[in-house]
Length: 465
Image 1 (cartoon, rainbow, N blue to C red):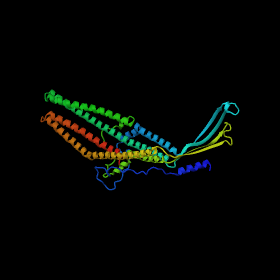
Image 2 (cartoon, rainbow, N blue to C red):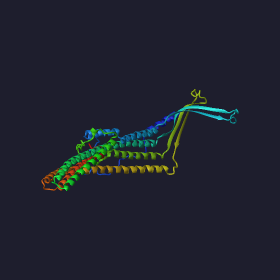
Image 3 (tube, rainbow, N blue to C red):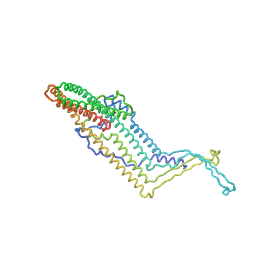
Image 4 (cartoon, rainbow, N blue to C red):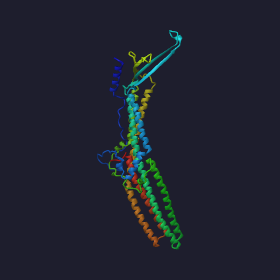
């Protein structure tokens, strides 16, 4: 049997052998409740499928800003480059499944002094060779290389999940920053409107004071309200500028003015509320959970490599070509040469190194199991917290709206009583402060409501429909 035929049969046996020593993978049971709290259970609630962010967010301006961020954000660009890096590393590991064939040519020249030659004269001996072949190619009979290849594949797939997770987080961050800017612009508009109203009230009070109709105390109280609104307007101008800077940083490019919000929008989401009885199994499709599972699968594959290390390893070195003592006759007839060097290594005594390596791999797998379960628990809490907030936001919004209506009516009555001489200016001052605070609180609750919808999009891995 020729060496080439032997090599061919060995390679065929290796490729035909698809078995590895990787333990059978079983996804750990999720250590959380079967359904989320704050929702009545229903029968046969289906698992959710992720949706595109364009189908989730309703405002066209926000969609354009998100698209700008996805195209220019540097953190997301780094996540994409990490995928390319992991893909290249996987190809490097996969290449070990095949022999690396290369061509070599060499010259060997050696000078011998005269006292070492038969002629008594110094001689220079030269030899030339040109061969093609491979060296130390391991026949993967026990799946060690395939196990390492499976581990590299899981690492590569995990980086893709990391990119998806980064994209969802970026979309949520852009939406939240855009909404904060909208809220601060609304607060600024309220502060300016309040300042203008108090400026008119102050001017009227000053004229009344000059006419002797009101006391100096009333004038100073009017000045207090005026400068308070002026300070708030200046503070919110600063907030708006900082919000615009933050949005530009996240977007990775200047955001056109026409894409910036003027006020908060109540239609941030185009989707219905989370349906009652949504099962907690939807968490397993979150990219960060999938990434943790990919890491766990990779650790499981590394056990197969550690187990295979206990068995013999067979490597081959082979080459074929031409050799001659002169360069001109290198490729003449009869100059052919070949070499075939099979090598088998059987571990006999490793001082416990192989067993320790296997134990490390098994413990590492157990660590990743615990980390996977912790990721599930953390995700469950994030959703539960968002749902707990969602359960009371409608009531909070209604209460804040009614409070603004009530304080506005109280302000009008206080103003009428003051002008009629029935009440002091202190009562009108308190009514103005109460109305202003109630309007600010309403903006804050509306921001919390829209931000909660964004949070649900993020913690559910991109929506729930």
